[in-house]
Length: 204
Image (tube, rainbow, N blue to C red; front, side):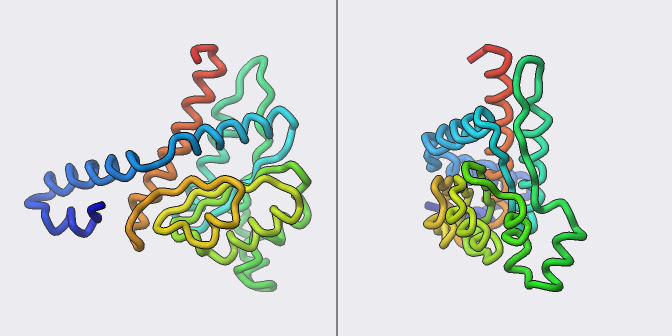
């Protein structure tokens, strides 16, 4: 597979680079297992049916996507006659995150929040381009021990997170290419959001 750096080196202009970037994203997306997307959608719908809580976690750009994903799921797909999803983003409380990081170390900012909230049958959705973020891995391992379902989205080689999760959506990209990975994380959010919206209208 080509790399983003290769595309950049070959570009003859800004427009050409933009076209090559889009082509590169398309190339990566073509290698993603759509069956895993189906598994994720089924897991989210099953969580809604049993009234379990879905938690989202991530760092940096993945934190922004986690917050966006949680918002879309909690509010974007609400409608008459449909139970809302019970969703919590653990990246949004700055006071809690900074307090926990200061007092207990950044590796524990998610697991300490989950200790007081997580129940058996809940779902934890973890986003990490590298798949090796210590705080995300700690939270997923804790969730596994508590009997929760763990879903991860990873890039690069998947890292330890891919191996620790019940369901892993892997974005096959070159190490260090955070941008394309995070682009596809957001596409996954909007893909799932769009599917659920259309499904609720009875068009699927």
